[in-house]
Amino acid sequence: MMSEQSEKKVGIISCSGEGCVEGTISRIAARLVLERLRPDTTVTICLPLFLAGGREERTFARDYPTITVDGCKKLCAKIGTEHYSGKPASSIIVSDFTPNGKHTELGSRRTLNQETLIIAEQIAERIAEEVDKILECWE
Image (cartoon, rainbow, N blue to C red):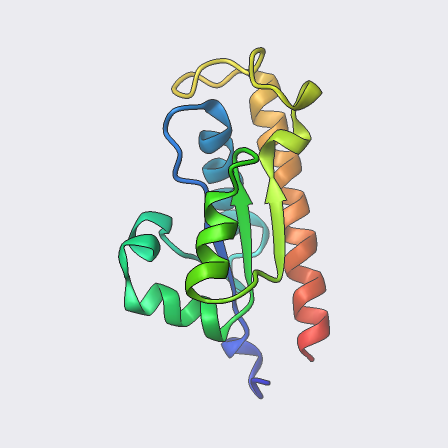
C-alpha cells in the first residue's frame, strides 16, 4: 500500500482499435476521465506501446490497479493486460453500453453523433466510479 495520497494512481488502458466507432468511444471516455473527472488519480497507458513491450507501461500495470476499456468483445486491452501484467482491477466493454451491443447507429469513427458522445460520457462516468471504488479499497 502507498502511504501518500499523491502516489495513488489508477491506470486506464483503452482500446486502440481504429476500425470501429467503439474504439473511438473508449478513447474519448478515457480522455474525459483523465482530463475532467479524475485528473489527479488517473493516468493513461498506451495499449500499442504496452503490447509492443513498453517496460514502463507493463511495470505500472503490474504495480498499480488498472481499468481496461475495450471497444468490443475481443477484449484486446483486458487480455493483453492479463497476459503481460496481471488481471485488471476492472474491465469495461463499450459495446455493453450501445443499443443492442451494436454500433450501426453510432455514426462513423471519425464523425461522432450526439448519441455516441452521450455514450462516451456514460462510460467515462462508469470509469470514474470504478476509480473511486479502487481508491476506497486502497486505503
